Length: 321
Ligand code: A3P
Image (cartoon, rainbow, N blue to C red; front, side):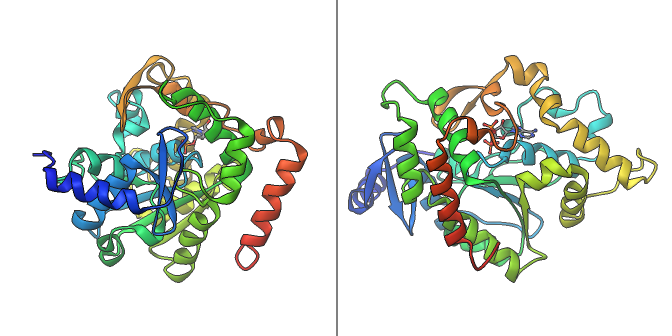
């Protein structure tokens, strides 16, 4: 399978040629579709998902804007939903990066157009997407599956993104200055942007369906990891383990400790290993671990840039946060 017919190719490139276009950060272009911006490859995956993806009620979908804490949440949810893995010498997280264990839907779909539902080996169906709420496949909304969304301060998101892009960017794509990235990000014309509309979509869904959509903040998790990991555990209705003697606090504490930046980033697999990702045959695992702190943006953005981003946030979120 996976063979693309000439018809598919023509109709996809036909659609793409009609969409508004901007410079991409990791790809040559990004295209605006249903109000958000996507690289050509992601857009292809998104269209396939919208047509063919079947969600199941027991699925857990982690959703995020890029660089908002996806790696951390992948590790946390994977550990919570595989309750014996912490006590197991073959804990998959010791030999694979979280991104290898939790597939990204749009990337998987672009690579498997005939059967876009990832085959999962773990006990729960944990998957990930950066797609905004409005464009999720209908079956995700209809199935009632649970969605965990992680949100982070846009100043730190932008800085984290910019570093990431600079490390991953293929030679064929021109480097982008922080000033240009800032301008595109503020206008909403950056990959998966607008950031603010992305957050608002999931925020509104979490208000409307609190049992179905959990909204977490990176900064809250950093400050009180156990409190928010416990909320997360309760939300996903994880299987309880006997190993911790039924002591829930202790179990959450151990999960938090294992998934901490210090612990995960210092694992051999994440220091030296690599994996193949969507559009990138080799990605060094350490690229997903940079600083893992709150407020690093102040070391890279000018005061004026920080103020401008804060202003947009205040204005966009005035009715919500
Ligand atoms: P910085 O670039 O600010 O350090 P994503 O996982 O969505 O791609 O986001 C990456 C950001 O999360 C990076 O931020 C990275 O360092 C940080 N990160 C990765 N693992 C983390 C962890 N276990 N705890 C906290 N932050 C983590």
